[in-house]
Length: 100
View 1 (cartoon, helix red, strand yellow):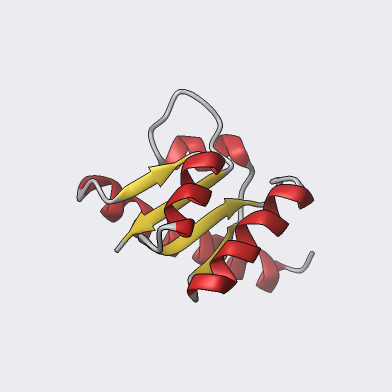
View 2 (view 1 turned 90 degrees about the horizontal axis):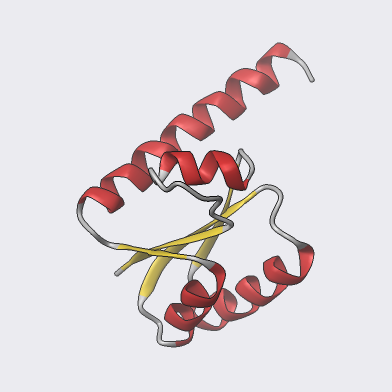
């Protein structure tokens, strides 16, 4: 990786982390793959974040329901552990959604 790519990824991580923390503070989040998919089926979320190490099967399922509802899916530039830290959870988080 080049230094420019590293800077871009860091900026993306900071921007997404800030957005996630704001949603957490407003208590407008859904955490966990099953809960995120359930919320997508109800068209109750505006945005989804997936960790960069989420399994392909989960990515496909979440993307399928997101496309049906027109919800944007973002890949968080960190693994499940990093996303859990941003969410201030004592466990790994593969999927997180922001409620409408």
